[in-house]
Image 1 (cartoon, rainbow, N blue to C red):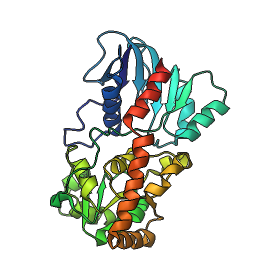
Image 2: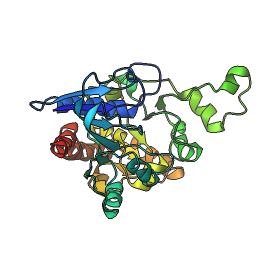
Image 3: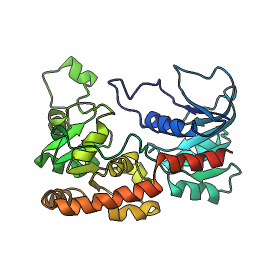
Image 4: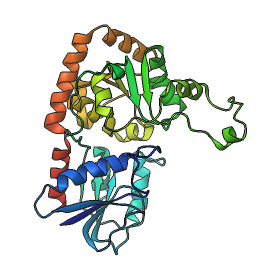
Length: 320
């Protein structure tokens, strides 16, 4: 069986200076494990690498019209927050006539089923590659009080609520926080149009972190931080960073855990942000034994329930 994963953008975001594309990271992980099944050939396709012969299945990671010359079947994986809301995007997807659907939020599967659609679909939550994300040795270079890996895409309200409180501590901030707008290029001596949170975080940020260093960071940071796109919150979807941190036996404070993954609640700490987040960071920095116990529970949960091996087994069974 020949299986493709299709991106709307060129490959290489993991090595280039541009933002890491989560769809590429997730696709490569699935491909790695699918290729271990006898008779399976899986690959990543994009505008810079198109199929040279028809595949059995193409899995689309972004909203593009399926190209019927590429494969016999076309599956869409709704695995990201959408600006129009995941629920509102469904109808436009139906109009594109995919042969099946994968949903990273259980609520979307329930909606699909309630509409009595004929296309087969499954709930396919993320799985982490535990051959890359696993506990690493101590490294003083990454022993931050708090750290966050991500880009300035969550908006002012959520960023102020869930990241700014951490600036009172030794914060390791990685990702694209120093983007120069056209206006800044024209008048780079003036910064008044940048929001206050952007100015402060741009001074702290150290840029993109190499993917090989991310597990070291998660393993060594005392308090890893996560917060979610509002649309993913509305859908009740779990993001990939949560399970990556826990797979490294890292301690994590996050904004919320969806009902579908409530078994994770013993392995993370949830916060309402703002003063609550500040207080929890301060408390857990002062209580390393509690941090370790919570991280151990999160690690055990991931190994049992949320590995890339578990994810691709479910995907393989759906495709066959």
